[in-house]
Image (cartoon, rainbow, N blue to C red; front, side, top):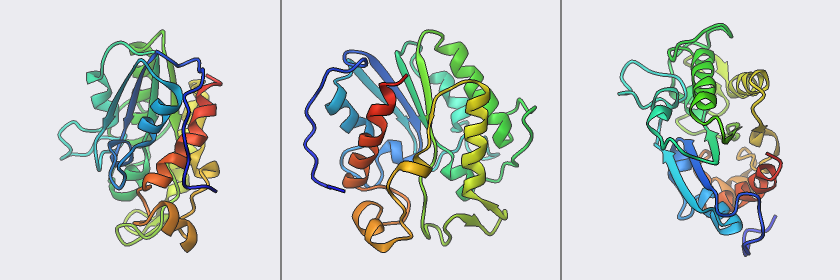
Length: 220
């Protein structure tokens, strides 16, 4: 995998279109000087790009999060968009206390309920846009653990699978970066190259993510 990538803008269905990216610290840009959505913009040439990435935020609400959950703050995003990309879930696994809940929940206080609220809310808000989701990446020993949270007993893969299931239910396209990102930081060579802290991709990691995401966007 080549870290040094030259991006030449090519014709895309999204060239000149408005794209919104909702997410956590990876979307905000922690650990990198150029985010995946900035690289995508170089590759595609969006007409306008806005990111709503806030570090440490989750999909589900927490008692002390001040309304920062993605299932709440999506309502404050721009009302117009051609493309909406949501990239979250790792913090729900990593330091979230919301229960998983059930598929019938419609509350932001459970993970499944928050997914229901977020997905249906985006469909209502962006009736004429393409909406898609990205699954969390693998992680290494960030915050003292990798893909099993000892406080909850839950595995990251469970959150990935719930996210994929809810997206299937609402017929929303989803890119499984957990499966195809090329970044498994438990391998030291990959961690050093792409995710030095075990969670946040560096510049090379964001470039690699953009290479995976760009062709997926063309299928929407």
